Length: 173
Ligand code: IMP
Ligand code: MG
Image (cartoon, rainbow, N blue to C red; front, side, top):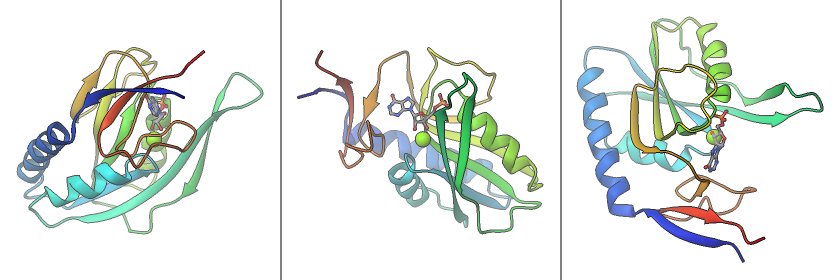
């Protein structure tokens, strides 16, 4: 059985999400905010963050998954495109965790082609140890130096997304 070491509790998540929601509400008060969640990991954070944003906004989703192909180049597949017209609007991409940054970079490149007025990034967790690309994270609730975490939307082989708090996952040898 894997071991789950508690890392970030429910109350802490709630507090940071509230603070982030308040900052976004203030920064975007005169803008045309569209929250765009990146599936699947962001679904729980997106739902809670949206409830902490007091200004009018719309919500959309992008499905993206990355995998290592047979060559060493990393591929990203879009499994869902946004439905809303994003042209001229202020897009805030909502991620669960930014690790190497490769997934997000590809998503930003894709969203840029839809001609929004602005694109910014909000992530639940900013994990810096393995960052490979230079990405400007505008809002992050928590920073993490290293480790592999699960819960609150984050998975290991599609499991543990349902856990209400965040755990460091230790796999037994
Ligand atoms: P990146 O392209 O390396 O930044 O990968 C980002 C994606 O990898 C995230 O959106 C997650 O789906 C996944 N990921 C990276 N680190 C973790 C982790 O610690 N736990 C669960 N998923 C992770
Ligand atoms: Mg993800």
